[in-house]
Length: 109
Image (cartoon, rainbow, N blue to C red):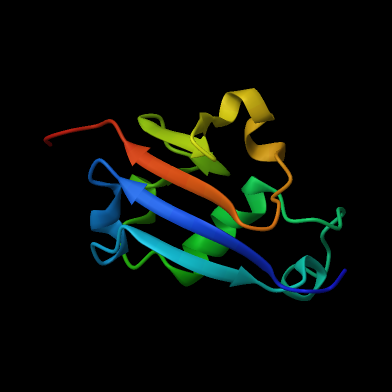
């Protein structure tokens, strides 16, 4: 289906400071091929979402959120309240109304 994919993105533990202090937002992702014409897969994966977040939501200092094509060490990612390691991390295929939470475990600095 080509309907937009709705996902809920949440930030906590200080990660929200990189996103204008907004802790939660619902986003509508366009068809992946529209966004990424040379993409080899059809469905949004978390790794695609990270690039979308960088392009659309991250206002400054992307290196505090991303490292390479993943989140930087010290940022915990939860998919519907469970550790993303249980879901295959970057290769998890996003589903309608998923909640993806990014929690910074780094304090101070």
